[in-house]
Length: 259
Image 1 (cartoon, one colour):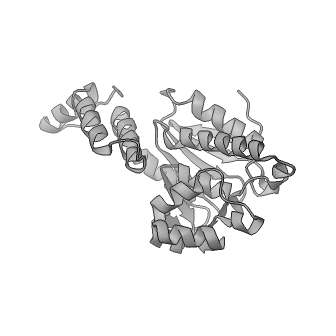
Image 2: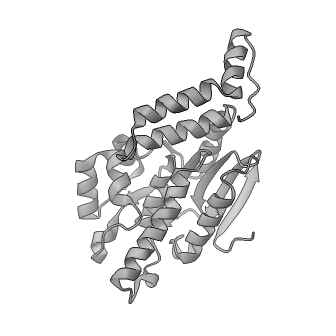
């Protein structure tokens, strides 16, 4: 499928997915959501896709929020449905079976920051700026920001950021736990790929189960300890788990098959 609002570049199984609306600072519109939804649905079980980096075209913005023009004249029901659709797309990213890194190259605001937080972790340019400015427009976050931001920075700091609409820089975001790495501007994709090249040498089956298990931590409907026990059982009895143990004992590199 051809995409209208994202660019796809793949090398050695790592896909760099770039939101391609630089004139609008890569604001998220219905077309971007449609493309993201299609990509992450289509490639969930695609063995050729081993990992994904999400970034924005240009050097000003990862994604500077939602496209506000689409909000005009919306009814309560339409707004609720829009929120639910956006949340569903970001949930697909969060639960993607391969690692997804947000390479934040500039403004990560509103819906854009909610997108970054739905990725498994964030690598940021030193020039990146993060924030949820929805209250400045008389709105609240609509794509999971009230739920994911407290997981990263704690409830008190998340409440402050959500109520003030203030932006924070990359270093503060890192100190709060929102960002994993801060790098020189322009190197955020390179750093993300470097990390992913390490991750994809591991068992794809174990990686998928690790993502699933860690995500259970923030889902109060699930017993994360029970899921960990079950997934440990699945990995230890898997081909990759047995191959990893055998390779360790034989002092050689394992040859994982993703099952």
